[in-house]
Amino acid sequence: MEKLTAMLKDPQYRLETLRLSDCLVKENEWDSLVSVLKTNSSHLKELDLSNNNLKDSAVEKLSAWLKEPQCRLETLRLSGCLVKEKEWNYLVSALEENPLHLKELDLSMNHPGDSGVIRLSAGLKDPRWRLEKLKLSGCGITEDGCVSLVSALKSNPSQLKELDLSHNDLNNSGVKMLSALLKDPQCRLKTLRLSGCEITEKGGGSLVSALKSNPSHLIELDQSNNVLMDSGVKLLSAMLDDPQCRLETLRLSGCLVKKENWDSLVSALIANPSHLKELDLSLNHPGDVGLKLLSAGLKDLRWRLEKLKYVL
Image (cartoon, rainbow, N blue to C red; front, side, top):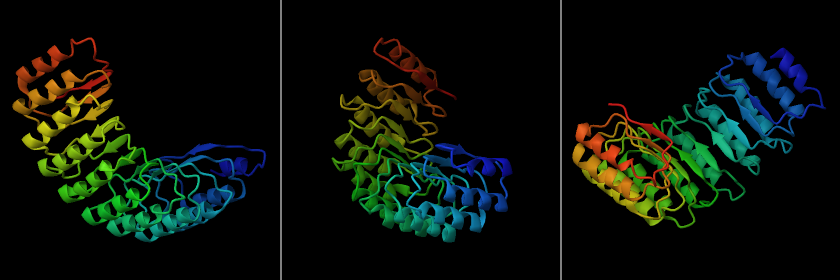
């Protein structure tokens, strides 16, 4: 770190991407790094500090740098940095002051809780934000946090292209709120990840209904590890059968899809196979008959499948 910071001090250095994920950097070393970035950072576009314990002072100093007008970051990844509510607020305040350049923000696997997400949501209502990718997987978000986030995103829906809310306790009520955003004709979301969000057939139904009303932009959908049940799978199958559906990636691992619903799902995929490139149907229960049905469908020359995951 000493050698790296010494190099970064050189005003002739024009670094655009810096990735230090999983580097076990100590607190005083973070301080020196952030100090250097404050003096020579105008060229940096991407910073990844994921899976490091930044501690309080490091987050405060990083936040102070993010406020600087010369900071032109487009991508910031702080996944798994153990950022708590107090430090989260410092960070969000800094991003609010200088939001013009940021396009990708990954704050997954931190501990802000609903209050932290509500704080972030208030900032996202600012029309100056140009955020295209937002990742908040495993952040302890429940229905209350989801309501605030969706409200903020609805005020500026056309910019966002990727949203990851996996491994949060959104439940059906939170997903219902999210569905209202997806129905907005201005919504241009291309990637939606909701793995392990405690969604059942009711929430899955409202989500699919929303996607059916505005299906042409979405190219990746991850609903893995949710119990969609019979009606949820049937509604999803109806969406997949729609010629306007342009899904390229579909993940339904661990959704407990049984044989009778498997048949309707595979039939829908067979009817509209030309866009799909990745399909994950692992950890379901179709049996040999269900697998034979899928295999028969894959003989269709219209399939463009590049990745198929099927684990019993």
